[in-house]
Structures are given as C-alpha cells and as structure tokens.
Image 1 (tube, rainbow, N blue to C red):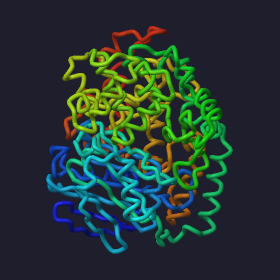
Image 2: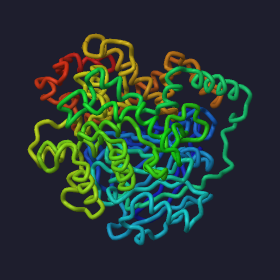
Image 3: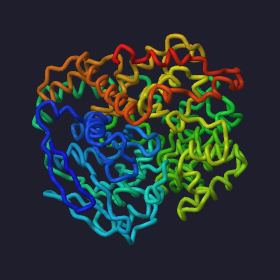
Image 4: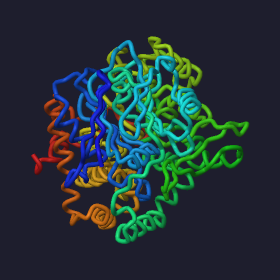
Length: 569
C-alpha cells in the first residue's frame, strides 16, 4: 500500500510506501499521524501548512461489511484542532483498488486557479476546473461523468468549500453515482476548496490491487463470521427497516430532541418526522423511493434510504436522523418534505447539515428568520450560492453566528455544533461531546442506546470512555460505527480479521491500546493548538437553563470531565 502525496502549488507528486507496522495505519489513525506529526500546531488552518488527507481504512475493498469508510483529516478551520470526518460511498474501495491507502494534498493552490485532480495509474493529472467554479456538487458530478465517463469515484466540494465556509463539507460518490455521501464535520471542505483550490478529485473505480491475504481461507472465514454476526443482530435489522430516523422517537421520549435552538427537549411534530412516518411516506409514494439502501458495497446493514417527492421522483438520498433533528425540530420544521428539500440543498452546496442547522437555529433565535419558516430558511441557504451575507453567516457555523448576532444560547463545544442529542437529556453523549478531541461529535462515542438512566449523571464517564475507544478503533479500521451496535461486545471478531488479513498477532488489548494512543496524540496536539481542558466544556447556559419538559440541566462537574483520561496523562 502507498500514500500519494500531491503538492498543489507546483503540481508535483510522489509515492510513499507503507510497510510493516504502518500497514495498520488506516482511516483516523493515518489522518491523525500526518496531522499531529506534519502540520504545525501554531499554523493557520486556512494557510498553506495545513494538509488534507483522504485515508481508507485497513479493510477497504476486502468485502467486510461496512468496511469501505473514507476518513478525511486536517487541522480544522472550525475547531482549531485535530479533525477527522468520515463517510460511506465508493471512494475508499476505489482508492484501495489502486493500491492507495491515502492521498495527501499539500501546500496551497493559486488563489486565481481551480483544479480537478485526476488520479492515474502512475501519477496524477491537473485539469483546469474554472468552468465548474460555483457549481453545486450535483451538477458538477453530472458534468464530470459526461466528460470523463462514470468509471470514476469523485471527491468534490460545492460553493461553500470554494468560499472557505467553516461549515463546509466534502462530498463523495455513492454506489449509484450520486454525489451525496458527506464527510461533513469540522469545515474540511474549506481546506479543499479555499486553501488547496481543488474542486474535485477523480479516482478510477476499477483497479487490480489487492492485499495478499484478501482471498486467503483464514481471512475469508473471519470475514464471514463477522459479516453474519452483524447481519443477524437486532439493531442492524431495525436500521435496515427505518434507517437512522428510528432514533427520533426514543430521543423525543428522553426529552433530548433538539428543538428550536436547543431550547426544548421535545417537539410537538416529532411523530410527523419519525422513522415510522418516513417509512409510511416512502411506502405510499413509491416511485424511486426505497426504505433501505447500502451506502457502500458489501454493507449488510443498509440503513440509507431514498425519499421520493409526491410525484415519485427523488427528493433526497439519504435522509438521516441528525439532519431530521438539526434541520427539522431544531428549526421548528415538522415536514419530511421540507427537511428533505433543505437536506438536498445542503448536499449540493457542500454544507454539514448539523453545523448548518446549528447556525440557522441561532439566526432564528436572533430574529433573522422565524422558527418554522421553511421559505425563510431556504432563502438564506440560497444566498450561500452567491456568497451573500446571510448565506455566509449560515455557512460559517453556529459559533460564528452567535458571536456576530450576540446570541447566548449557542450549542457548541470547541466551536462545533452539537449533534442531535441535547446533553442535558443524554448525559453520556454530553460527556463525549466535552472530552473527544473532535468537538461536539456524536460519532466519537454515542451512548443513547446504552440501557441506563440517561438523566442520571452517575456512571457515564466510564461508559463514554469505553465507547470512545471502540469508535476510535473502528475509525482506524474503516468500518462504519453502526457495526459496533452488533460487534462491540465481541471484539475478538474484529481482531481475528485484522490478524488474518495482515499476518499479525494482535490482541483485543493491543488494538484498544492503539485507539487510546491515537486519542492521546490528538489531545496532545489540541493542547498545542490552544485547546486545553477549559475547552472540554458543555456551554455554561446548559448548566443553568432548564430543559423542558423534564427541567434537566447539565450537572456533570468539570472535575468529573477532567478525570476522563487522567490515567493516560
């Protein structure tokens, strides 16, 4: 396996071989190593010293269920620290078939230029992309497929990335040539579009490279055992039927569903935007609608969906829980059609729907738009295409919007908007928000499905810690976090696959230590970036402002938060 390092300033490139222990560097592990060792902590995240890393996991193109995640890493323009965001789609498998574990964009591009980078068998080609400037991800992909053919996976940014917006995301191609699998968090799209001046990267879908044990009997046996265990588990079955939208009502019952800028924990129209309502809508409308769809080849969970319009044409694919909450209940919107339309616009613009929902919620609180005003929110988002003032405010994150508008209720940690679990009602996930190096990121350690009282603060420090370790490990391996709902209690299954594929003698303990070491390196880097323990905090207002309907407050102490990783200091 190799790294492909591309200098966007002089358009040179070089390969770097990965051998020995480095072969276990994948996903978040690889992005972490390059960020913490090569990007100066004091450097400007929107400056030339930042690097943008696209990394496959170590199971890419090996037919492991949900093993084709792509990690994208850099110093975050949004949080100011280490960042990894990941997505499904076909990019990671396509890279692996070229023998590439990672692609690293280095230096800064010419501000007056815009490029497409086409990956070739023996190098890269830079293609002038100025004619595509300002295009959304969907018309861009259509134009590139028409010009180059559909035998490519595309990594791209929309207008938000070109404008350098702090809420901008990076889009990847799915199995059906949609440009809608988003590596969304942390403002990574700004690094690609504004700093590197790269509009898209084209990677051949087909390739002949395969790891030497890809077809060995020991690995095939370990892989089959793992895949069957996932397919037969209860949580994946529910995800396949209702998708991640099945989370709406459980979080509503906990009183933790972000509503009207995190001012309430329940939404009067929650049932109208629930997984059950979405299932019924897809069933009744038919057309191109699908209840389940894999986001990458070989996924046995298949929790994605295709939501049809009333006429049966595609509205959005997929519609996920986080978007339903942040762009729905958080904005006072109770219509799947309205949420879906805003979701499709955000994907085209290249914006993180969590960060965007946070910004729009803050703007509504400030009176720039009313909660429940679908047309008003849509008009603000349309200004992102043109770089209008309200569009820039929406696209630059909730923290920036709060500062500009003087709003006190800003639901962020390390300047990143919280995902769809108010920490006052889901204490374990709140601890994850505070302590992960990634900012308020649920993917680092979601606790909502742990069978324990989520309103009682006791006992969640250890649970969050253990889940964060597991999630970090799966981010290294490149397997979707949803798989952990089935396999987290059977860690030997993953260990067996790693050992069989890479001729290793790893143990569960050694793999977990690899994940812990990764997070400690991230925390140390953040500290150098100025993100100390004082940034490991839930917003002060959540300690004081009671969350209806259960009058919940954030009551986990700062001392308890600071104890999370003390034994690793």
